[in-house]
Length: 95
Image (cartoon, rainbow, N blue to C red):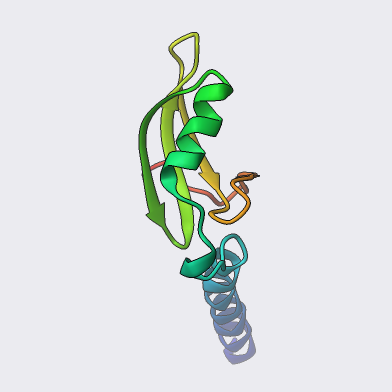
């Protein structure tokens, strides 16, 4: 029984340690290399989005917008390339 609890503790510790590493992989661009928010807004408006907000969070641009059908959209963008960052299964919708 003692070995089971030690193994479970190790598995738990490894899982906790993976969280911050996963969060760091998306946006690690130095602030000096960021393009302005206006550039991202113009890009998205050109794609038919109505931008409600653009904010920086975790080193990325996070966008809330609506499309031409009025659907609400949320997306994350690399601040240097202004390319959309694909969502991963662990991403939360509460931002």
